[in-house]
Image (tube, rainbow over all chains, first blue to last red; front, top):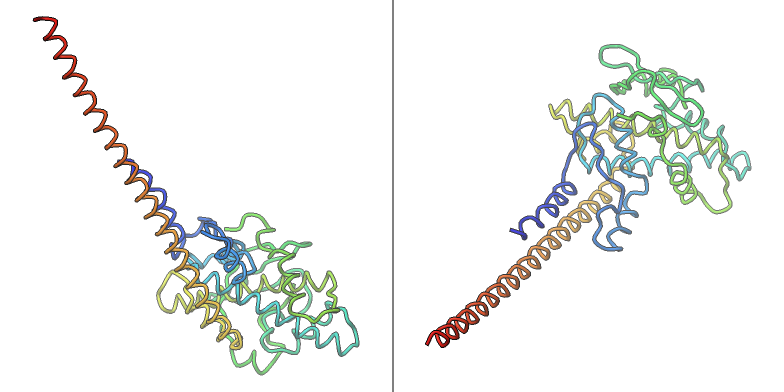
Length: 179
Length: 148
């Protein structure tokens, strides 16, 4: 009797750690290293994803169309975001070096965004309100930047059909403002 | 849903560390540039999520999975990320598998320990009963002697 009672919490722990997906609204402890059995396992998880998975998941769930996201998808987006930060920093550095500067400035980022196709989604005038991609219904959704915070004026909704126009004409980039 | 606005920002310390590790030594980053990169990263997460979600919806699934994100990266023209992401995913899967096995082992050990405790307990109880029986027998014998 006692054996089964004490085994129950351990089983629920396993279920929680092994769960592939969480319904919207539930906030699991997904920070790297939680529930680790040894110090090496914890360190390995920290090396894998430097950005906190819980924060990434919160951002992902800000899209009302997203109902469920597997742990793997959250991890990959976190990893991709790291790679993106590295990439944009390195590309901006090229412009800082062209100006014979050792300090990366905002204008270097703007130059990199303007020049590199992959950054088209960040392109546009420096407005406070970013008009996001038109949804399939044609309603433009937007979110606002206020001081350090990024918050939504209306729910974020987007469908990304990267049309030929975007590739040919830089002016037709769907985002009209960049943070 | 994110109730607080700060939940939609990525931690500045981590972003700064990633930037510093990506750039050569001696290169500084202005505060404004750092903030812009951080906010661009947040927009990237939203962009990637929405793009991946459209792939999941096309496949009539409600759950975003790793494949959707990979397809989204291709769609977003970040093909150069695919290889490092695949490698990272493999490492992550191994880590998760190890974690699962470790917790399974822990559970088994716990069960085993509880099982041995139970056995010890029952053995002790049996011995106690045995002792009681012997004592009862002795008491009965004494009573008989007294009667005689």
